[in-house]
Every structure is written in structure tokens, then in C-alpha cells.
Figure 1 (spheres, rainbow, N blue to C red):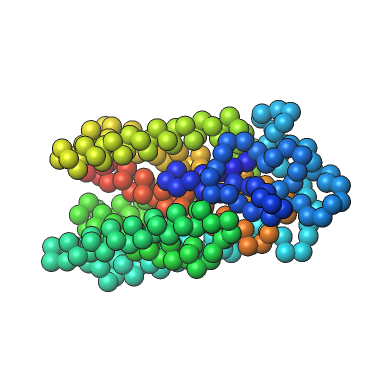
Figure 2: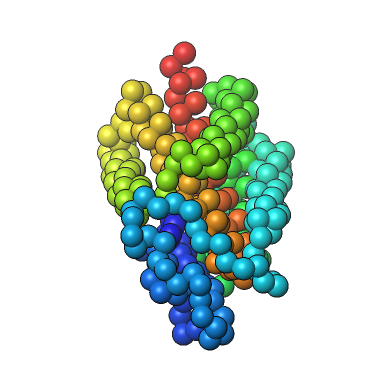
Length: 295
């Protein structure tokens, strides 16, 4: 199952000239029928059946024999903790060193926007590489953290000191809820599910881009998708989309472990999970800010 982040397209399982890895351009569907994308050697492959070929709702990934150097769930957890920890450290540093008072607001916002652009570029570079580059992923997390720190500090200062903590707790609850639903098999990640999520995400992003253009050239809040009743609706939709992409991320991790993906691929899993969690946090922060402003 190929997976994508709501903001950035990224890798899916593939095999290119005998090298197993992740591709930059995701496509709907499952690993190629007839081949384990991480199979090595010429021995018969007992997992040659396409897990999606017979029934679209089939869920469980095939279990490949364990081999030395293969990715494990511990690898994914460790790399994700490192990446998210870097985001938190970057956010804490920005919160402490980049005040958002009237004297420093412009400077802090400028640095935050610059950090966001750098993080965007780094994420794109990593997304189009065939192998993970830990330095790129950690750098992305650091700059993303700076952006989140300034935005969170501004929300805490001008909207309410409790909004940021509520957004953090909300993001954690979404993560825990989707993980539970995934483990209990209440969510089934199929090709149909993937196609629906991708179509919804592309439509959502297109509307947000149009709204941004109207806001830039027309002033105000553009088409009103980020304030009032419409803002609340689109905030909820954004969080639901983030939850759906979490399910796709969990499926990709599960398949990578089952297929015996190389241990280095755990960095890509951490990269994807981090981007998705950042997306959910930002949507949660925006939604709670609107709700707090309406009180």
C-alpha cells in the first residue's frame, strides 16, 4: 500500500533495478503482484501473491521471515521519537528565543516563515530521494519545530494560553484513537480507502490554495474557509484527513516490517509520521483558535 502525506507526496514500496526502496511519487494500489518488494536472491518467494488481488477489503499484510538488518517496530518507534523530539526542541527554543510581543512580532514571524519554507524544501528533497537521509529528516524536524514554536507562542499570547496545550492533547488523542482503531481492525486500509483519502486531500488542498490566493489579492479571510462556521467545518475535515493519513502510515509501516524492509527505511516511516502529526496539530490549533475566538 502506497501512502502519502496530506501536504507532501512521498514514498511507497517499490523495486527498481533490483533495489528495494521507496519511490517519490505515490500511486494508488498495492505492491506489485508476484514479487515481495524486499525479496533477495532467487529462492522461491512464498509471499508472491498480491495481497490485494483477490479482495479489495483484505487487510492483513503477509508475514515475511525475519532477517538480519530488517526494519522492526522498535526501529520505527526509536526514529520517530528522535524526529518528534527534534520538533519539540526546535519549538521550545523558538518559543523562548523568538518572542511575539509588539516589538519583536515582525522579526519572529519572518523567521518562522523562513523556517517553514526551509522545512518545505527539505521535505521535498527527501521525498524525491530513493533512500532516507537522516540529516535531511532531522533538519526538517528542527526547522518545522521553529515554525511551530512561533505560531504556538502567538496563539498562546493573543488567543489563549490553554489553546496550545489543548491542541497537543487533541493531537495525541487522534493518534491514540487511530492506532487503536487500526489495531482492532476497525479501519481497513484498502485501495478504495486510499483512493478516497487522496481525492479528498487533493480537493481540500485545492480549496485552501484558492482561499489563500483570494486572501492575498483580495484581502480579509479570502473565501472564509478559515473563520466562522466554514472555518470550523474545514478544521474538522482537516483533522479527519490527518487521521486517515495516519492509518495509511500505519499500514505502510506494517507492510514494510512484513516484507522485511531494510532497517534504514524506518527513518522514512518516522519522516511520514512526523509530517502527518504536524498536519494534525496545525489543524487542531487552527480549529481551537476559531472556537476560542467565538467565545
